[in-house]
Image 1: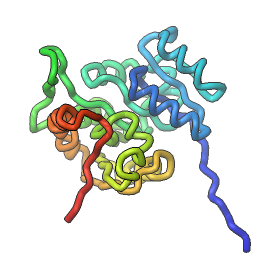
Image 2 (image 1 turned 30 degrees about the vertical axis):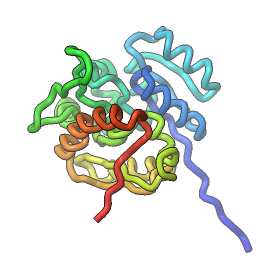
Image 3 (image 1 turned 45 degrees about the vertical axis):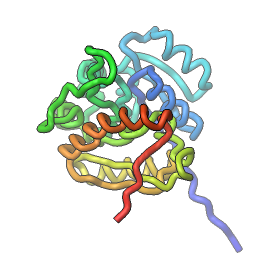
Image 4 (image 1 turned 90 degrees about the vertical axis):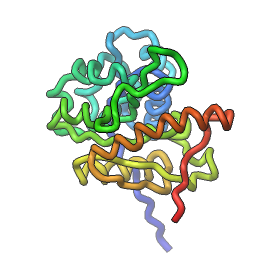
Length: 226
């Protein structure tokens, strides 16, 4: 009996952001065989350079614009307060027509912990990004879990829990769902609807932070039952 194994297609991917989220996602993507360029404000960013040297031949670094131009798809892993500025630096032309996976949250730490949201109930960071870049296919996802759970959901209950996607473009959401399932190992992906539904997942961070404190761990997630 012949068994055919579908080969994973490798891609060029831009990851904007050098923090824990950006490093975790970029490292996972390189491990999967993709070519990944990490973008920062400055081409000589020490954290980005150190990551690229550690991650191997398929890893590189540059400016936000370099990473956005390089990627067939782009991850926004910047801090929410700086996301729009970072994406403007990345360049509208470099993002035009591409899927932008927005992982950022509108968290405001200016008054310490716990943070607040700098958006209100009638808006979201995902929507602000989509309005600023109307020709980019913004898909909000992965913003409801710790960075390690993003790329290894099995570390919580064997992976039997849920991730959400929000976005205006059905094809883009389908592609991101494939990425979540095929690359990162998510079993359950729930399409919430258009980009306005990002208001719900971003607002959930207020509860997520309290749960982190109560559970004494960031390795947890939601499981929908009905």
